[in-house]
Length: 192
Image (cartoon, rainbow, N blue to C red; front, side, top):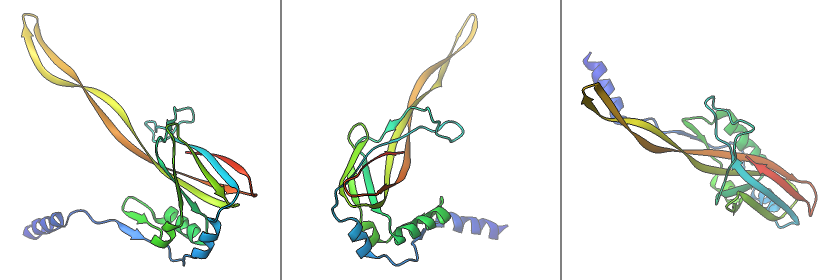
């Protein structure tokens, strides 16, 4: 019994287990990424938004859009290293496992910020395949009645409640692939 108690104390002192961090076992080719990010004549225009999930954890098709206002959109060139990173992320990423790309690979990206309606643009893009990603933060407001006391009269007891307001913060990772097929092409995308 004493051993069980001591083991519980030791585990409690260590705290939660740190997340496991994984990297792709694939060599990053900076020349390929650099070549794909050179200036071109194509344009990627889009709108970034998310939708609230219902009680079943699903985003209904007809739900109201929550636009990604003043949100950073990150564009990565799709290279063999990126494909390896994405495959590893789909296979291994979870609550206690993170999949990162190397610092060098992360440096080869473009960024832009959305306007107040979620619109964004990447100009001077070469033909190729790209991956867009953003983290959209939003919140929902709720209220509940909180018991504040009781009153008594000749007719019995009356309970009093006052409304309490609170908000819950949410964040969604939104991602999409886009391809510019020819020089000068303007591609429209919905990032959701």
